[in-house]
Image (cartoon, rainbow, N blue to C red; front, top):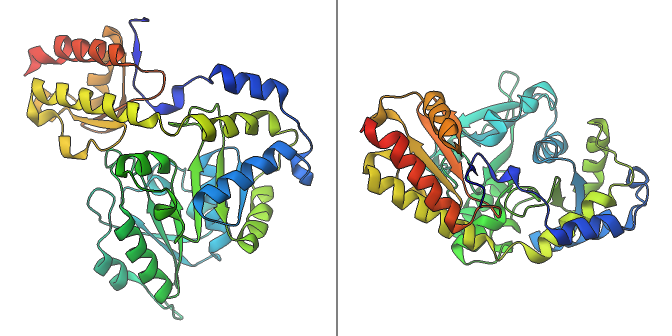
Length: 347
């Protein structure tokens, strides 16, 4: 086992042999002209899994989210998002700079915006105020520590939004993590949303790509927006083939990542319970609070990296550790040993 452990993100995974073989043998065509059969199969499979009628393949989750926002919103309209949503914090301001829409950040708890707060925030629009047109949800919620939105909340939020004339977009980059953690059909978390973006290159282990799903009419318009973003690809079946393998083979095994994250979180809590909130360790993400160590997150990450553990600062005093398919139980024990040796003396 390589003694260096990389827990920065589940984006660091490498394709499985089955993915590489599928990519090598993929039947391809010009996707920009709608002629790539492998991309078409991926889009159809992805839409069916989300409980939707159609899908469009995008090169990244950021492109998928931005394509959705541009399709749902007219310039000057407003979208409601949880205050620490990925769309707000990690997507380069595209909602304003490219979609031309106004985001309104609402405080949430573990990624969940109270329904009454959503209701109060909705604006019908006037000569002075933008019309609220879209509610964005995120499941799992990255900066909350991989926490999940359950089917009851999702259905209630969608019902409220639709009754008030809003569409709902779900940033479901790690939606299969949520479904596995809940033991629920993924459609119970997606079908009520007007659009869903989910990633193939996080826990599912494909080398790149995401899929945006929705109704036939929505996806028809979304393709136009994807083209505007430079997302019209050519022989993209080479990468779509890995996505098909990911959907067929990599979902059930996410439970292993969750178990490894739980073991990691418990080991950190055993070092000092102030370092992490175990109730937030619901999927494959663990957040470490460096406050009790007297360190900024960047300094803590630097010390851990020099000792052989790669982590990611996601706040002034918050370090993120993410389990994935290339991390086994032995890696977790190695990571915990490094954490004890490096951070233990500071407590």
